[in-house]
Length: 134
Image (cartoon, rainbow, N blue to C red; front, side):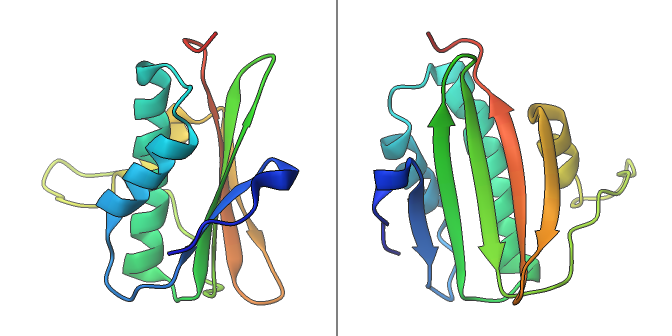
């Protein structure tokens, strides 16, 4: 994992390890967004964890995670880029299912989210509001 230059406002984490380590991704997210109120940071961490987990479960490397905080009103832009062209699908969960609720959480916690195709692969993006952060 490597951190890119945030000169353009984006913080970039290259996801190069074949073995998923969402704990490391969450620690990196906390360090990048250390000035967010804890309530807002928890929402962002849930969305980041889901998008990165989807990369490791369903997509292909190379991949990267990008974060950017904007102000007035506060929001965090999250972008997950990977080499797979297969888009994630928001599906209703069933009471007996043990998986498949991640995108429902992304949908509920984000002001908006979507998928954009790229020349190679796709990016899944979300905008998470941070109303508790001054």
